[in-house]
Image (cartoon, rainbow, N blue to C red; front, side, top):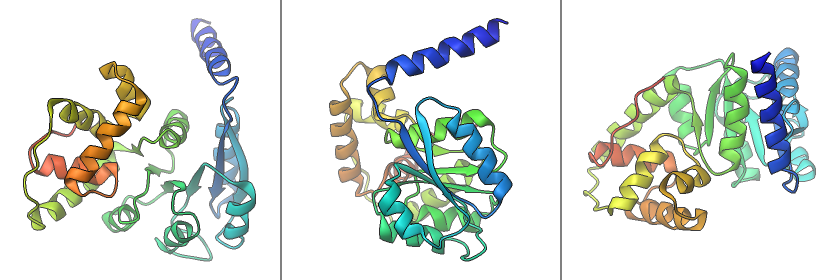
Length: 239
């Protein structure tokens, strides 16, 4: 069928473009065997992603991070041996720069806000379409973010209110910085932003660094929420 041919073509394109690029190394931490199997099956089917390990809890996490050297970890917040953001806190203490996608069945605001405090790179709800799980791993690995629209609305509202309470002074941005901010709000990676604005990836990194410095923000998500609060940009419509 045309769809199957298109999918085959897409897969060939990925293989060709990634022939000299290491596969993204993903680690799964979830106490449900069926979930681990399902996610592992989805990710391992991609030519540019490799699931290097899976754990049913936080026991052995330090050794796993050290020996397996994952690029991205998909972490459930409700594990049998540890609860809530304690697992996330433990991961951040061991590997501060590791890309973290919180993968959970909970979309309660408490979980979202607490996880956001640790600067997670992605937030996916269990049951997300395959394409979102795969896209999330690729996006965060490239320096972007991957937060479902349902979660993003709550998260941005919370962070905007927090920024407003802090009464941050209004910051001036160049036209190019505003363009970069708008694309960051859409979860775009540095590569995507560069392609859209016809500038190099290193130039994008320069602008992102300048934006974070001007806002005194710790990560892209916080920078976007602060820019929204100040009226510099508007959030893209969910969906």
